[in-house]
Amino acid sequence: MRMLLIHADYLEYEVRDKALKNPEPISDEQKKGRLDEVLAVFISVEKVDEANPDEVVEKAIAEIEDVAKQVKAERIFVYPFAHLSSELAKPGVALEILKKIEEKLREKGYEVKRAPFGYYKAFKLSCKGHPLAELSRTIVPEEGVSK
Ligand SMILES: C[C@@H](O)[C@H](N)C(=O)N[C@H]1[C@@H](O)[C@H](n2cnc3c(N)ncnc32)O[C@@H]1CO
Image 1: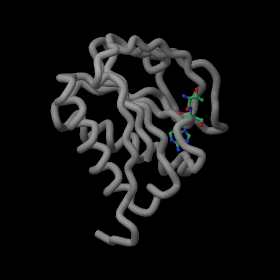
Image 2: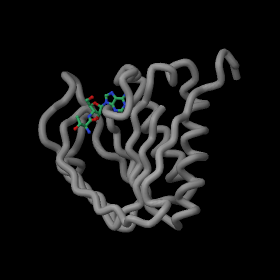
Image 3: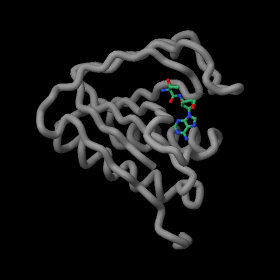
Image 4: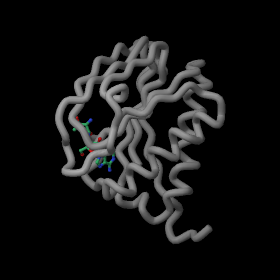
């Protein structure tokens, strides 16, 4: 999994066209979204993650929470982003992993939004520009370690 983490004044998106034949079904309300004072997390789920999705979710939560605490962000925007890797996981697996990340961050008390999966989206992002405002993380499941 590849993550780009941007601490921002705001992130807003608007759904445009389908980017997959069967994108995630969404309500009219989900066609636009915005969060202010947010840690935006752009995530590419990778093929290697398919070996142990639960472990990758746990590691992603730990990394995201570590950065959120450092930048004192209480809102997190989980943003599916297929452009951080050339070895993408299948859409079905990727969506399940992204949903689990969203749910677990919410359980930890963060205000969380997740941008719709499987669409082209316009977005506006206002990066704060401080030294920790732009970070990236790479997460891989342990080789062959079964739970
Ligand atoms: C296109 C661009 O504007 C938009 N931002 C976009 O990337 N859309 C992606 C993700 O929402 C999702 N998607 C599919 N596979 C994956 C994956 N492995 N990991 C993350 N997202 C995925 O499906 C879309 C097409 O790849």
